[in-house]
Amino acid sequence: MTEFPDILIRVLRQAERVAALTGAGVSQESGLRTFRDAQTGLWAQYKPEDLASPEAFARDPKLVWDWYAMRREKVRGVEPNAGHYALVEMEKRVSQFTLITQNVDGLHRKAGNRNLLELHGDIQRVRCSECGEYAEAWDENGDMPRCAGCGGMLRPDVVWFGESLPRSELEAAVEAARGCQVFLSVGTSGLVQPAAALPFAARNKGAVVVEVNLEPTPLTAKADFFLQGKSGEVLPELVKMVWG
Ligand code: BV8
Ligand code: ZN
Image (cartoon, rainbow, N blue to C red; front, side):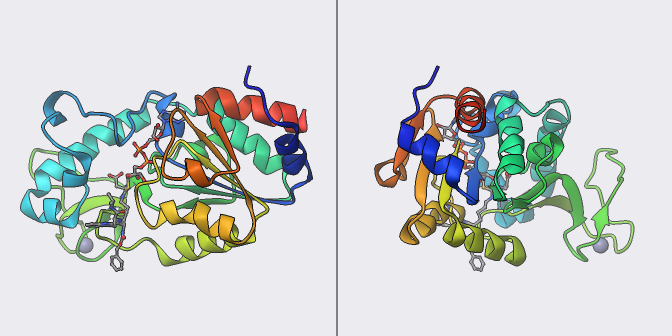
């Protein structure tokens, strides 16, 4: 059982505006590998950053397509965990709760969060790399799946390194970070920009910053509270202690 400082319980109980940023750590307990975890099998020889980029797609589109096809299969087979559901409960209890996620696995939406900002897209959505049209179905008969409309190569609807984040989601996330009274950063190594800047933006506007992670990150030294542990354990306990 994690011990929570009384002040943290009180601050959260009184808060009307809370924002939370999540990373791959929140989905780890659903059985999905985090970005930092070493890749295995066929993919062991690649670093994610070397596959999640327009350059990689230009160089070897089929390799990148197959990597995402494998990850989509994995995502299809997993369920949200207690950490996801604790964030759904938090949205019910706080009058203005904004969930900002870097994850592309769609598990927060599957768990039931409504006010959700997916900064890096959704791996289960596929779009044409030429005309941008979304594709619901495609034939994976070995070579590169193509757009029914224009014949362009299909790609996952995620934000690759070097690509801009969706403007409206990012603007809404910055607004939520700057306007909140409490900012939670959960299960993220805080290395990827511009998402990693959000907790600092909240702190600069006087928010109380709470970090939940297995280990310290570049944010930890600046956080008001560092709750070390698994998000799937810490978050449900925190929600129970604050809101009963
Ligand atoms: C942009 C979708 C610019 C794809 C992702 C130098 C060269 C090139 C670029 C840059 C550079 N320096 C900075 C940049 C910018 C770059 C960047 O930040 N690079 C980093 C690597 C240095 N950022 C970008 O390129 C962004 N775009 O800046 O555009 C621009 C500007 C104007 C005009 C045009 C362009 C785009 C970034 C988005 C990249 N796409 N995902 C895909 O998924 O395939 S990011 C990807 O990595 C994930 O989505 C995720 O966001 C990120 C990994 O981070 P985490 O989620 O934190 O996961 P990680 O594994 O790192 O950590 C897990 C954490 O959980 C750990 O701390 C662990 O301790 C903890 N944990 C584990 N288990 C648990 C747990 N905690 C609690 N409980 C547990 N059970
Ligand atoms: Zn097209």
